[in-house]
Structures are given as C-alpha cells and as structure tokens.
Image (cartoon, rainbow, N blue to C red; front, side, top):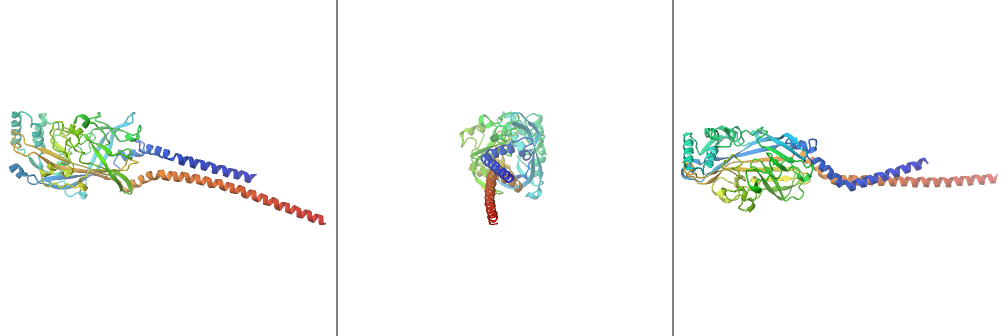
Length: 490
C-alpha cells in the first residue's frame, strides 16, 4: 500500500508539471508581451526610467567650425567664398530629465538639462583656436531691417559704421560656441527692442550649458495607455504646435530621439528637434547589426529638409518665399529673427547651387548622413548620428553700405553631430530580452517534457512493482507446494 501511494504521488506530480509546462508554454507569447509592456512603459519605478532620466551611455557633441579664408576678396570683389573646416571640437554630453510631473493622462511633463564637458583628447584643436566668419549680429540686424523704410536702413547703417561693426569677425572657438562675446550693437538693439534675443552676449550655445529651461518644457506620452505611443512628444511649451511655422509644418510630432516605442515595420520615424522648432522625418533604409544586435536603420533623405520644391505639402516651411532651393530649411523665426537656415553638413543632398556658390564643401554620405539605428522590439537606439549644419543667409540690402553690393550667398557657419553608441553591457541586456520568447517556450515545454518523464517513471515503477509482486506470489506458491509434497512423503 505504501508503494502504491508513492506511485500515485509520482504520477500526480508528473501530470501537474506537464500541465503547468504546456500551459505556460502555450501562453508564453502573451506573458512575454506583458513583460515587455511592464519593462518599456515609463514610470518612476520602471526599468526604462533609469535609462531615460539620465544618459546611460557615453554621448558626444562634436562641432566643426568653418573658417572663411578669403573674406576680404569677397567684400572687395565678390570673390567666391572659400571655407576650411576646423575641428572637431568634442564635448561629452550628459542629458538629465528634471522638474518631472507625472500626469494622470499617461504623460509626463519635464525639462531637459544638458551638460557639456570639453574633451581635448578627442578633439582636433583647442577652444582658443581663432575662427573667421560672418558677423552674426550684423547679418541679423541687416536681415531684420531689409524691408523697412529707407530712412531706417540708412540710420541703421550709420550706427553700425560708427560702432565699427564689420561683416566678418574673428573669435575663438570657445567664445563662439558656449562662452559668448560682448557686442555693442547687440546691447543697443536690445535697448531699442529691435531684437528678441534674450542675452547681452552672443554664442551659438550661450547660456545653454546646464540650463533647465533653455530647451523648453516637454509633455511626453509614457506608453501606459498605448505602448506604441511611448516617447511621443505631445506638447512643447504647453502647446501641441509651434507658432514658428504654419499649418502642418508647425505640428509637433515624433519623439525626442532618446525613447522610442517598438518599431517592427515602420517605414518612417519622426524626431522633434526643439533647436529648429519642428520635426524631421527619417526613412527606413535597411537592417544592420551593431554589438551583435540587429536594428532598423533610418536616415535623412533629400526630402527631409525640403521647403516645397520636391514635396508640395512642405511649402508651409517657406510661406514668404524667402527660401532657396531644396536642401535648406528656414529657421529664422525660431532663431530670434536671424537669417538662419539649416542643411545637412557640407550641403549634403542639397541642391547643387549651394555648393557651387562657395568653395571648400566636400559632401560625403558616410560622414555627413543623418542616421539612427533602432532595435525594433524594444525601441532602444543602438547608434545615433544626428547632425545638421547652420548657415546664415547673406544678401544685398539697399541703402546699407556694408551689404548693398554683396552676392546673395548661404554662408556655412558650423555643423555639429550628436553621437551615441550602445555599449557592450547594454547590448547584452538587450540580447537577453530578445531571446526571452524562444528561451521561455523552450524552457516551458522542457518543463512539460520533464513532467511527462516523471509520469512514465511512475508508470514504470508501478509495473515493475506489480511484476515483482506476481513473481513473489508464484515463488510463494511453489514453496507451499514443496512443503506439502515433503509432508506427504513423511
């Protein structure tokens, strides 16, 4: 009886393990999806939170400055401007999400604090290098009064001459990027409310290093309502559109670039870039492998910075017609009225007229392409190479002596690239997540197999016990017969 109870227990355990393994294996895809949702959905306690709150991997911001070598010839005889690229000047970047407010509608409101540290060991040059290029203050003032009355333009011209303003300036790299420099014309323009620039000093990234408010306030979906909306920027500065562009061009769409939803078959992705107050669309190119993880590569094509020449619906980026051919985007309204236009580095993919107007540009796809590789299941960026070039439009302005005889030219000022690559340790974590579906099914059905094995072991034990019992009965019977025979013989 004791043996029979043990066999029954073994059979029951085998059946339970088999059922558990089979059911778990059958439902594992649903269980895996539940795990993915829990891991990726952004909450203050989720796994993804630590990767979002502070940059988890090394990220670099690289600046390439353009040095204008023949500015005097250009001013004197309209010679074609020649530029020599200097750099890169490399800064280590850390991105913090601060002033977080978690809303009940599945979104989080926050600001971004970006901190940069100059890394001279990775740079080709120092921050004391001198750069000669277009005077952005003088160019902006001339641009802002170009359609004003003749009297105002003449007065502005006299003021600029009295102050000793020049079309071209020479400043250090450090002053041009972060430190800033004093400019009397800028101070006067601020006192007269002739500019919306909020600073008394000028640099391309002045007052930005370590600032909580410079990039604005973002409202982003956390994926709690719909995982495929994870990371989507819903509002910027408390509005779902910008006032810098009209119609669809002002609509805020896409992510900030650091948090993505699953992208299994997306042909396009959008990134909202507050530096240009609009979104850029990247298109799928191919699948590629980095650190042993396969991702989908998205790139910027010739339509990304079109202003209506190729795609008619993008005409809203150039409502007043003050734009060149495809390849540059007018961001003057976003940049305090400066004649600012962005393009790909070295006018890559832009109309040939931009390159032909200057010398020194060497567009190269491998070096100047904007690209992003994203793992499609988790939305984790594997490689990021986001880069743009800043250009200032220099055009003739009547009744302003410094500008009236110039040739309309897009002057390349600098280009920058933000680069980040997933580290080997994080790649290993991603690999574990990606093999969970197969690993889970194999493990679960393996458990079911063990249950079946235990079940058959129980049956075998039962049969073997039965055989032994029958054999013992036969032996016993024989012994009894032998005893009986011996008793009869006596």
